[in-house]
Length: 105
Image 1 (cartoon, rainbow, N blue to C red):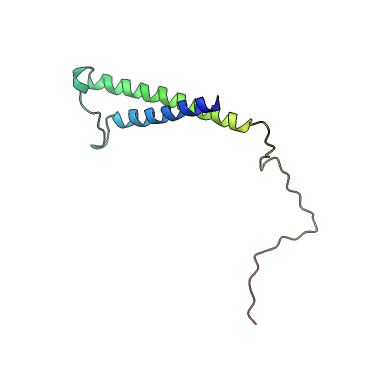
Image 2: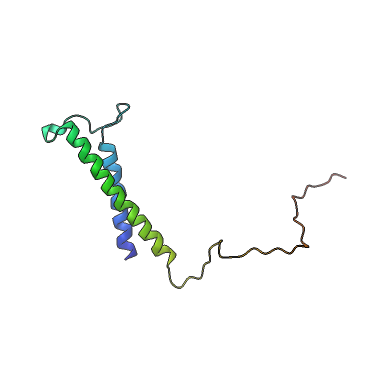
């Protein structure tokens, strides 16, 4: 299950990079997907289509990221604790030690 989800996550990441790079740049000549896309769709329609596609792929990417994080946190057999779960209790009589500086003779 984890391997399949990881592969889907990888393919979504690659698709997201490709779709973002295809979008027309607003501020400069960095976009490679400018123009009318061969007359198939208008410039306005292609921008809208790429924007919607980016949003959908990004949503799935976030969902797979959360699912992988949940699966990693629920690994059975490992007894690792979070740093939040371990209480730090200091005695009132203990004084904090500062950094030690070598003293010249």
